[in-house]
Length: 264
Length: 287
Ligand SMILES: Nc1ncnc2c1ncn2[C@@H]1O[C@H](COP(=O)(O)OP(=O)(O)O)[C@@H](O)[C@H]1O
Ligand SMILES: [Mg+2]
Image (tube, rainbow over the protein chains, first blue to last red):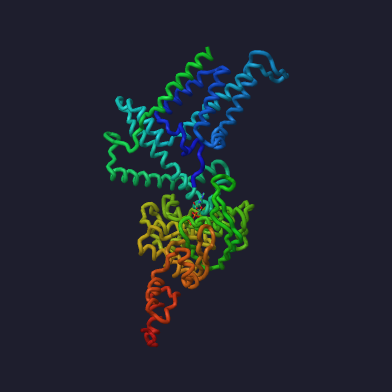
């Protein structure tokens, strides 16, 4: 029924899947920082190699993974072309009356492509190996200190998980209403842009109405089961750090040190 | 309007790992002006079949003909077909969106490019057909009862004057009285407007009482088809398909355990059964 979404959680069992989501989240942030900080050849070689190893370790079908990177292919090509023609420096590789390609341009083009690829791959790897529920739980716990300054962390996390939960439901509903209105003579492809936008009103309004109805039902059901917000609430699945999660620390440290050495 | 389906196959997401064959080798002929009930377990392909007939899903192979409109996998324009076929999905009231009942019913006819006068006429007529009092015209459709909202939705479809009316479980979620009224309405539309009706239902009673032809789907194939008498008389096939039998048929089966000769399984109303029993009693061959 639902479409396959880029970066959708792939429920297989792997070392990466079993890691604590909090550890993974922090590690991914640190890693992305490293990627942005690196700007030399050898560092990128190391980072790319690391990501590819991680993909292999996650036991995710490679085809599924490449599909996730495909949408940014356009971006990668565009930025590499820009760098190829605009970055000057080093020997001239190609000279035409219109443009010239310098060594530095080639280097920058390759580096930028790798940077985008590694960033996208890391984000995809996180969402492919961590269920939305785990990610919300992890965010909630990591941000818990902010409750001290009155940020409604629990409520925000609850909203996020409810929103994630209802994406497939709403998608199915959209399809159904769209078909119903098509049967009443709406042609979504025909007409001017304005016309085409106006044509979507008969979908949007029923969708909004049913979302409100669902929200009301859900609120009622949650209250009936005694939901009172985050205060004093216990969890069915507690997040626990295990020994395997500790591996993230030396891994991160080694990457930092290696990069610091390579960039020096 | 006659519907002819030949070697129809429908596959969702063909050529991907998510491919799912929903209909296999469907061959079916529905005579113009007849009332057909579509039965089958959840997931047997009923909704897929009616959406294909309504021109909302394209066949993967095979073809479909309604009147003189032919649909094949290569067909580009299905809007002509959609004009002939009116379809009410399950819970059609979820598609209401206008401020007033009249405006919502007018939505379809407006898309057809009729004049305001013609549209107003269509609205009035459709409200009468579904039994909505004219006083509800300017009310918000969202402030009506569930049964009334469903009537508004169906009126919105009838106002387009389709030749074929398709209803996907129109009685779902209504109380018993609402269910009866809804079916009486459909039966009346069929008789008075000469509409060809395709009704998806789970209730054998409804099917037996109203339909001239039953089509039973199982795992995307037509498992059994025929008149209610033929279908419900075929006990072996019914038990093989694990289908429910109308209550009255169950009663006759129970009576038959003590009756010789047995009563025919083809009586679908209390009146028919009463007449049969009476005539037997008069003949005095009932012990
Ligand atoms: N949009 C869709 N994408 C993929 N599979 C679908 C879709 N719609 C229905 N199916 C599948 O096709 C089969 C038939 O479904 P459907 O026609 O809805 O059956 P019914 O209406 O008899 O319950 C089911 O197995 C269902 O899961
Ligand atoms: Mg269905």
